[in-house]
Structures are given as C-alpha cells and as structure tokens.
Image (cartoon, rainbow, N blue to C red; front, top):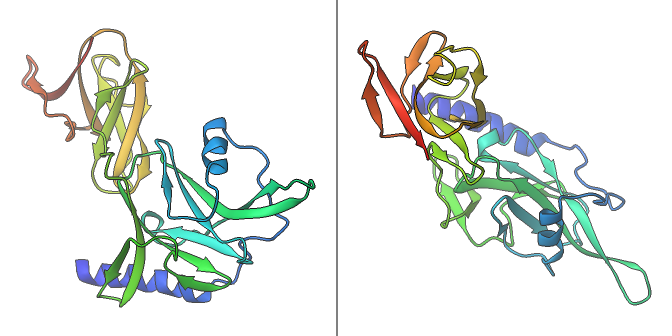
Length: 245
C-alpha cells in the first residue's frame, strides 16, 4: 500500500510539472521591502550561485537572462510554484542593471534537507547552480537537494528568549494540543502548529520552575517523543517533564 500511495503522489507531481503554464516572473517585478537580515543577505550575493543558507533563510538564485523562473519543494508535494524576483543594482550612470533572480525560503521549522525542482522558461529541471542532486530511480528523475549540515531539527527545548519551544514529530494532519501543570491540564488552550509535514511546534513563555506536560489528540494524552525526560504522576500517568531555570 505504501508503494501505491507513493506512485499516486508522484504521478500528481509529474502532471503538475508537465502541465503548468502560469506566469512565474516578469521583468517588471521587483522586490521593494525585506527584513533587514534578509535584505543584507540578498545584496551580499554578487552573482547567481548555489543556494545560500543563513540561520533563518535559504536563498535560491538564478541568472537574470531567464524570463520566467519558479521553484517547487518536496514538502509541498511540488504542488506550489514560488516565483523568483529580480534584484537590480545601480551602475555609475544611475541605471538599473539586473544582478540576479532570487527566491527566499524562510526556515520556519529548520528543515535540514530539502528536495526541490525549478521551472525555467516553462521547462522543469534541476537547479543548474546547485551540484547537489538526488536521483529517484522509481520515476527516473533528478531532484536538486539543499542540506544544512550545521543544523539539526530541534527537540523541545528552552530558547534564548526564555520561552519553551515545544516540538512533536508524528503523522501529518494532526490537531495537536498542549496541556500541563501550567494550564491546570486543560487540553484546549494551546494548539501546536504543523510547520512541516509531521512536524509540530509551539513557543510558550514560562517562568522558572519544573513543569509536567503532555500533548493531546482530543482527550487522549501523548508524551513528548522529542523529550527523553519522563515521570509518573501520583495518579499513575506518564508525563513529559521540562525544567526552566
């Protein structure tokens, strides 16, 4: 059954890759406003290159000679095409000169490896600027891969902002809530957000102290599978534990 579902999904992706004709980028499109960190990173790229990884972004670039460029990711089943934008620089005569096309992916969930394909002037292909490629023998296609070897998918932990970043890894499409001694075990106050397929997270400020908690699917408790610290309560329940110092 798993193999059948895989081929079904892949077939849908291939249909998209061969049939899409929507405009992705026009020469008139320009970026105007960006967060400061992102703006600096984009302007530090002098020419089209392999994907640039920062703490919060992955920046994909392409030659400005292309008329249309877009990118699609594996974690979206290649169903969404994100258009590139043009970065211009001003020459000595005050004229705008195309520097490179770019797309910025915000790393909301710190994925360590992403597979993707690009569409250039109507043709699906791998990223010509990225030498890191993956071959899928089941469908006889190459996919570009970007990997951050200096980063790991984080577990539930205390962040630098003195909040707790709660993490859960499981099946996709769950309606997952968080409850604990900080909510008097009310399982409906906080809901985790699925920021990647099967990857859920929630940032919650908590004062110093020791806390017991579980995740909930409806009224069914689930211990935190990214936190090895577990204890039993007086009534025999297994709970996860976090200590905020």
